[in-house]
Length: 310
Image 1 (spheres, rainbow, N blue to C red):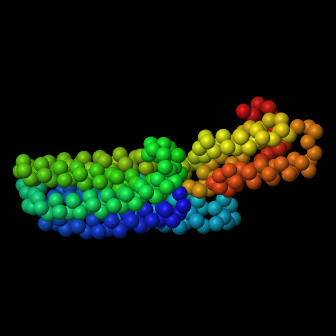
Image 2: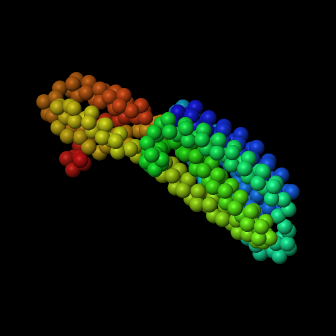
Image 3: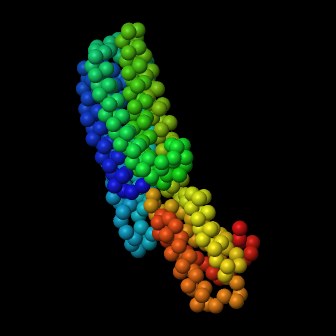
């Protein structure tokens, strides 16, 4: 996805989360709701995460230098991983702690949920703003991945926008859980239910953090391009009668829109050297034109063992 699409989704999320956090903390102060406090913390973390992702996108656009000859594209993957850690520790951890404290402390349990209307007003408003932010992120995501969401999760290398979609989706679910929790706590006159709700929200955040961490880790370590992109390269190589064989096609994403590919080819013995040079240059050009994600292509033409080919 283009950087402009990622930034639009993140800006929308930051604006929504900042406003929602303020409303949630106000409601928590006046109602004593543990679940609402957890939701407020969640929104603050989401706001901070958006800023971190914007920083990661900016850093990833820096060009190559002596220390980083392939550029800084993986910066966005690193900061996406940091965001996952924040969600796990500050989001899930604090929410679970606050919920357990509410359930276990008799003095806290005696604090009633003072105003159901406060909670409902903030929660309904928060669902509206979070839903709008989720819609913006989703529309930007679908521009690049018009197929189903499940296949898009596998294909996407844009960890920043994916993080916004997952965060906003989790936020909407968390808000619905909070609404159910404060309602039950109010009508059943059992504040402990509010604590259990906070724990449930925390567990949701822990799950989301684990998923995001795994996706970011795979990209950070060096994830290959998709199989259909490899098939494009093979189709290009198959079109040259001068090639006796080819293989060892290796690729790695250096960023959402930046990948390196290396391959080995063996020309027929009667192919002139000048023709070899021309074909190698043409192969590189055609690979880049087949998908502009291939920004670095390396073709090895010597010292090839037949066992290395597919």
